[in-house]
Image (cartoon, rainbow, N blue to C red; front, top):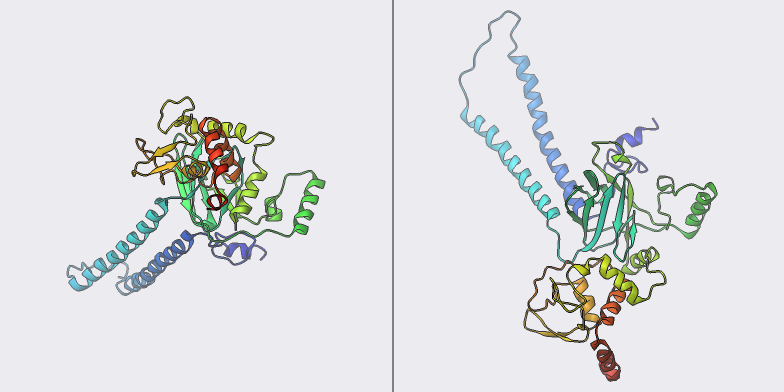
Length: 379
């Protein structure tokens, strides 16, 4: 009897009794659930009368043992058309609804926050940029999120039941998925967190997510599984998903695990320039790459592809990193990915400081800013 509640909770968290599904915490959840119920209803609609007819006609036309079977060669055209065309309409309808839901999940919106995911035997590692990696997946509510996933060994499958989102992670290639979180995960009280932390420290054991049902930072969470149950220990690849209510709260969490340490902004910006792949497109020696060089670029006026001109200042650099297609420099292709959601304000400041340090024009720009009137600065 003690297992009865869990038996009814086929897909939900075992802590919730009699819950058919887990929380609906993304924009995909409502559509997926509705489609599931619709297909189930259609199956039941046909299954029940077909089963009744099956047993009824089997009994009605049953022949006694030894009697000769009769052959039915006549037919009823209207009935045959009805049972052929009717189910076909339902099948086409289910295909269309399923295809639309699939395409929605495949079409990643512009401007989605991006987080890198590295899977391996048997763990997950989330890349938040600025050299910050953490096994927990932390997101911002009401903003679309794109996961760029890769595997270092075998096929894994990232699955978040509360988001109704699942995607295989295949070694040797990048794979992508996206979702739109809609429900914030709450934070426990300071007293509850302190009590759990004290017990964990006294027992000298690792943090028990199942026991406490919140993270070491006090956040409630959704579950994240590996659903590739084809080999050993895939089922042990579990981690958690936390959805923050504000950007400030998310940035504070990321900053807590940031690795800048005592580095200056310029020094850390140079590290990010190498770590985040800027070095692959933007040179620092004046030669042109896939993107414009950083050497002596800060403070100059740039000709854009749309014919406008813009001064390369702090705001331009920040916008170009977060929304790279907003102001594309003439002569270059809009191929740079957005780093929105991957870099904190501290990271952006570090990159700006590093790019600024590479330009002799930066001092001129700073002097011009200093000489600007208070009204101009206010603008």
